Length: 239
Image (cartoon, rainbow, N blue to C red; front, side, top):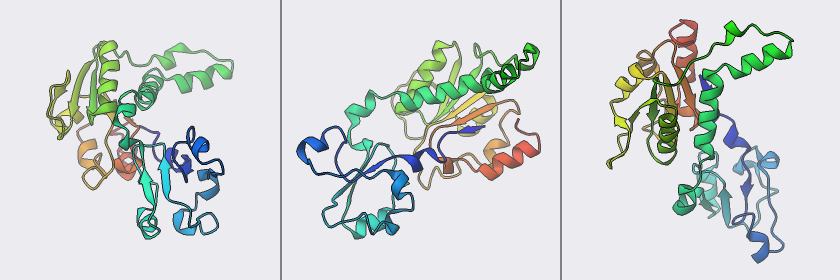
């Protein structure tokens, strides 16, 4: 199981401005506030917040890391990448990161690198999983999920997906959530975090997953019930 989401977004920069490339042109005296400076949260940022602050712009599609209630009290506008659909359509880094994690886990890359750094090479320990012919299950088949599906097909994998909001034709075999859990050798998660997706991956879902399956979550951490994952690992229901 791999999650790149739990802490990554907490380290994103919060800008009291427009985009960092163009803002200095129009607002020469603008000040950029890094999240490393203000990780304590908006409600504790008295020394940084001035009456001139109007916009908080975050280089993410989600904004769960921003205290919206406090921002509303200050009449601050929150901007995310969601507002620029044309730009988003061209961005693939999240999908590439997901695929990098899939490759790292399926080929045991981290363990193999550590092994060779100890001047050892017992290759039988790191046989890995051949992706060709395996089943890739994608939870959330929107912009990022559809890119991951393309990568899976390039590796000659069978691609299945679950997304209750996708109505158009996709080159993905759409199935139910629990069917995906039981069939997939690799599960990649690409959903927004809201009340309907919090703990989408729970004990019921994990109870259907193959013990040898690889689960990669590059969406929000709360999409996965990590206590359920830990329990599955302890019970050897998931490796």
